[in-house]
Image 1 (cartoon, helix red, strand yellow):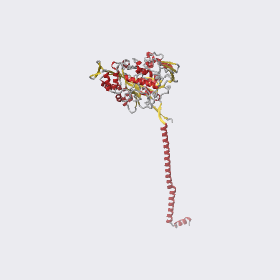
Image 2: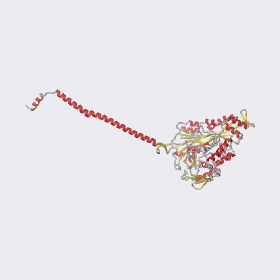
Image 3: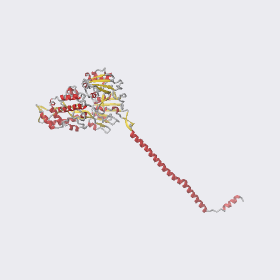
Image 4: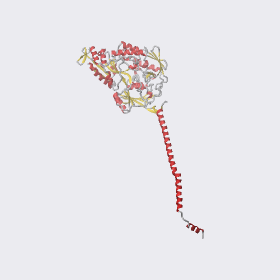
Length: 598
């Protein structure tokens, strides 16, 4: 028998122990389960725990990142800000015309603005309203108070590169004094001698001490090397007056005449990179001159300009939200100037009656700008606070009627007459919405006295009308509604001293009083401040008694701008309208991120 047969028989004899197999299978199952728990299930829990830990760490990392980001944002907010940057164009709308760019003859708003931007002065007004050196580096006054020696700052140059010297100052004064030049500034300089002592020093000799002389040194300086060969009689019409060379922050580029029918012009100016006070941030400045305010409003609505002047209060109120209006007061006053030499106005009782019958409070309250009161011939704050100033009479129509009765003007029906002559007044003013409103109120108020009020409104924008030659110089009015530029100092000598009577003077009331003259003359000397103010207070008392004028209000200047990065500073004190350019080198339309100084 073979071995294979024996193996088969033995296999057939084998028996199966099912219980043993079952036990073994259960044992294997238990081992497998325990193995799975040990190496799989238990590790799944570990993975879950690990995920929690990972998520916790990720959350912590996210919080750290957020904290760092917040800190960086806080740092950015605290140590960085948006500031002005170089470049860009600022366009400003104003009333024309632009007939000349020679600053000696500038009269319209557009001409005066262009002059201020292109030409420098020895002194300008700073943000406090005080005279501050511009071309002048320093000034010395001798013991007599009548000799002023001014040293010019180094480095000032004309736009063509030539140096600005004391000879230019001497030359400019000579032009102003030259009768052939017909400069409106001549009356203020006829008795002043200017002489260049060197390239950087100029000396002024005055006929008498004048404490406020620095305020007179705000006139524009002209270039001698360009104009010395131009006859004074042709200066206004010379090529220089159409393409000037100045030394200011902006230089002339060209004039654009875009609309002959509307008489629209645009003066293009470019930043003076060599300006002695630093290059302006703006690259260009444009002055858009319009014939009327409707043209200015159209320019604003079509976004042709960034800023605008010469708008009326009602037009300012129509501006969209992107524009902001500035309404600073300036040192101008609106007055009713009474021609004291006219037959019906020569009697002081008649003038006092008008003073009492003028409700200045009602007039001011009716104006949209709500201007501050100005009842004196100067700005009261120009004197020390301790100076006792006289109070103007209050509105009293009954007292006014009584004065007219005493003066012999008796009612005949509804009109007052004297010696068969009616009490009639010719009230003259220039064309302006505010003026028209005031004139209507004055007619209503004064008619209660029993007088006839005839009004004449002169359109100064009409080229056929010559207001100065036809109205101002011959004093063809009984009462003139007009604003007067008072300036930075209470020196109002030019308006009220008797020496200023005449066709070329500014004493538009033909006012003369010996006591008033003495007070004005003495106050101009180099007196201690308190003594000077006492003189002006004495003059104001006499002025109120004689009534050569009736003060209405201090002027409010209206300027609109469409919120560029920086422009005019309305928080500063503006002596005149062009003081909006006090910070012109800082005006900007572009922005940049800058770090704050810790």
